[in-house]
Length: 172
Image (cartoon, rainbow, N blue to C red):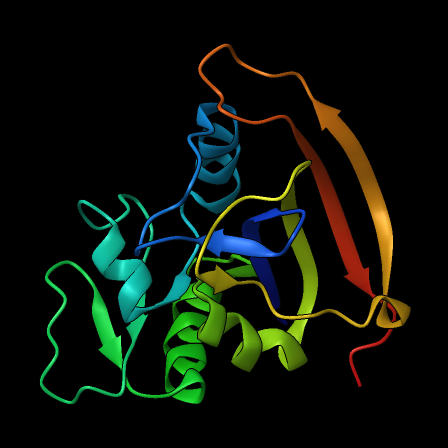
């Protein structure tokens, strides 16, 4: 059984994904989609993403990458390399007959994982947003759009969004 690595992220028009270790928007519609897609799947994230969460994401294996050898993540598994995180995630996925592993951020983790990712689930915020953390540049010649749809905005959503799924033309 093979597994697919998938990046999932909300990204502003100017590639912003964060500000002051938080998301600079509130998108309940997108949070519901995130939960639906990632439930019961292994997640790989960086330490800053982990710290931005109020608690471990339930019903998902939370794998936290950090260079800090003394870091502890209550409710998560700490790893010190992408390779180590992938091995744990794949073992869990195969054990549970799951074929998807999600990379949920942040910027450094996305950059490291991009070469092994086969799909990107991107919620595109239609406008530029002020921030200090950015999604890595994509070479769009390597990707094609599987689907793209404007999302009906919940009255609580702070921004209009488009949901786009990218698939890599070839992994190697």
